[in-house]
Structure formats: structure tokens, C-alpha cells
Image 1 (tube, rainbow, N blue to C red):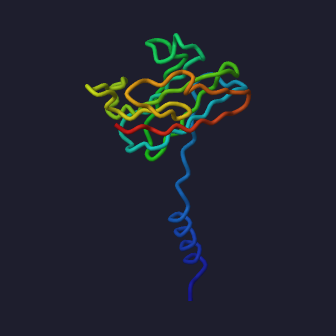
Image 2: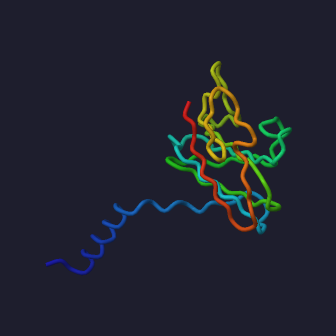
Image 3: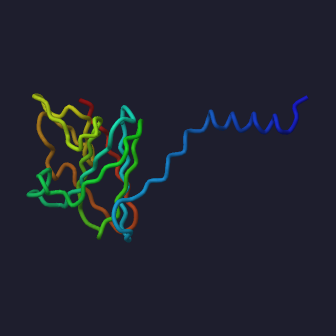
Length: 155
């Protein structure tokens, strides 16, 4: 005969083994406002290092340029997906670039054939030996909360 404590423990263990882990609360970058951008980075292969995100304005002259980002921030990488967010000053059109800084050196490592660390962009454009255009990655952010999903390109 099973007692109540044993039945409760068995139920709790079965729930823990069948329900996906609850993700940790994501702390957003910036000052809270009426516009929040959440970023879900999928395809993270390890928990090593940092996930780095760069937020760009809708301006071709700033996109993927040194000091062109409105904000760059880093959080610990989490496999298989990393969640990030940022408070925006206002609704608008933006672009996001991310990379998995697996060695935590705070830069995207580049080899002879391109990046040696996994990377991705908002709207997940197909990338063939060149950087994506701003038009292929920009997206509108209205007031409220917007979520973008970014799939990492593996090197």
C-alpha cells in the first residue's frame, strides 16, 4: 500500500522529468519604458561564453559599422536557446545582430573564411559569403513588447 507522502513524491518526480525546465527570468537592458524588445536566440550549442547582441537603428551608414550600434550587451550563453531583452526609448525600425562569444573575449572572431563563432541576425536572412543588407534584417517595433527569434548560423 502506497502512503500519501510516497504518492506525492512520485508525482513530483514524474512532473520534473516530463516538463521542460523553466527558464530563468531575463533581466532587460536599459531603462524601463513602454517599448520592450525580447530576443530569443535559437541553436546555441553550448553554455560556454557569452551571447552578444547589437541593436542598430534603421540607418545604412550605421549598420554593422564600428560604433554604429545603439546598444551592445552581453549575457551568459545558455544552450539550446538564450533569451535576451532590451528596453527601447521609442517604437521604430531596428535591426539586431548576435553572436556566441564562446571564448568570452568580447569580439567576434574572424578567420580566413569569415566568422569562427556562431552568429545570426533578426529576420534570419540567408547569408552567402557577405554581410546581410539592412533591408533584409530590419523590423518594426511598435509600443508594447515585441519578440524576435534569431537562429544562429554555425561556423
